[in-house]
Image 1 (cartoon, rainbow, N blue to C red):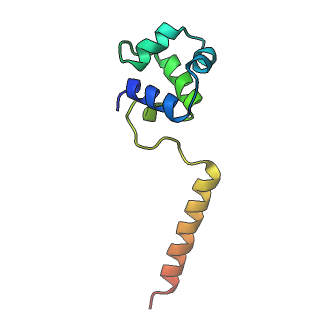
Image 2: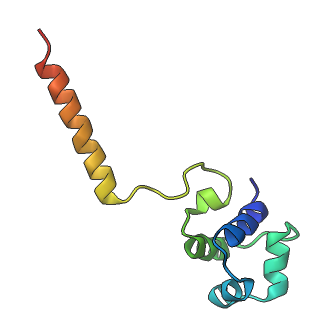
Image 3: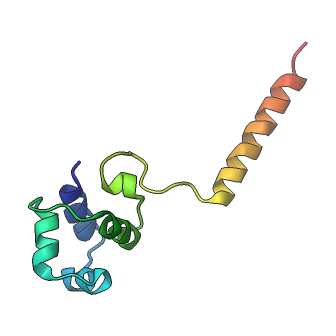
Length: 95
């Protein structure tokens, strides 16, 4: 997916009025139109702002990752703890 496709999809899925996005990003309607229609590619600092507005990683926005958001720290620590318990139980059950 291209950044243009991502921008359009996120705006529609999140039901965000374009005027709100423009105000948050502090850009003109014509600039956003060019980004969303693939006529122009935003600069790096704008990509970071856009990712923040849509709540996704820059890699996801750019189509470089299939993971929209990294796991939060609590979720990650719990997953590691669960894995340790499973491995511990498996080692304890060995003959």
